[in-house]
Image (cartoon, rainbow, N blue to C red; front, side, top):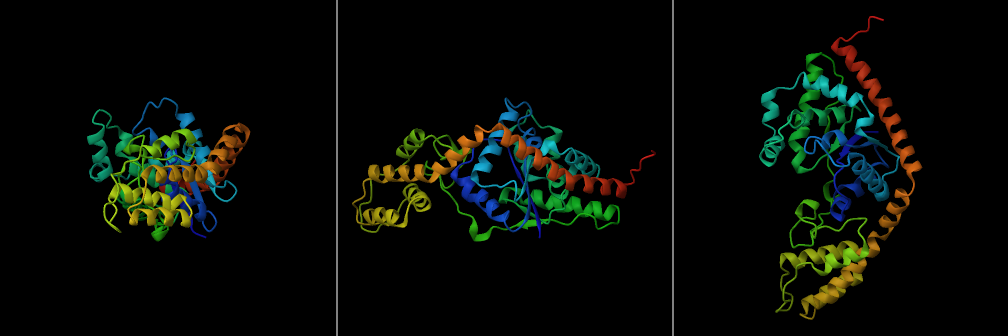
Length: 332
């Protein structure tokens, strides 16, 4: 069984784009792979070194991913900072990471432009921490998006370099886990092609969204004056709303409104009301699960404790062997 590792940044809430973009596939993946999912609280400090409520953010992410279907009995779900071996391997990898190669990483250069007053060492060495997270468990697969492909290549470089420097085939060389056609691209409500929290508050529908707020968001969604010709091509903003309906509504509902559009009979008010109600129905199980989890601190503590124990079982073994390979020996 292949080992897969993926990080979850403790920022923001899960929206439909996250769910269909990766989380739904994580849920499937845990049935057939040895999965480690970690909440990357160390990573979050590279861009937010003084978070207002780091613990609260971690708790929120834990709750929402559990509500979305991650199962601590089928996968290892843990908080990054609960596994100190991550930091030790990060240190070892940094000893063999070079300034020039780290400075050439595209995501680093982008962050330097975005936050010129916070160009910290953690930001520079983000790829080595990411590598440590993965090879700590000797993972063979890593789910990565387009924006992380270069970091995956760096990860592969650091794993190979360690093996070559110490003449030992110790770390597997991880490759990308390709979801292929399983990924569903979810458009935003604002007429843009992507749903995401960075696109603005009115763009995304969150799994735990209050129904009243959800309705208001959908009713404010961008539309036009309506079709003027039979079977005319839908403009992007309208097409995006139909894509959302195709995701959350029944086939008959989608076909009904598609026919109305094609026959120049659609009323956007009715269309958006239906879309909002179907979104509320779709997200209802998530809201209920989130509420249940938020009221059960004992269960959340148990999940995190068990996750840390399972993750450390793998991590301690790796670090023990890595220290021996490097040459660390105890005198007592």
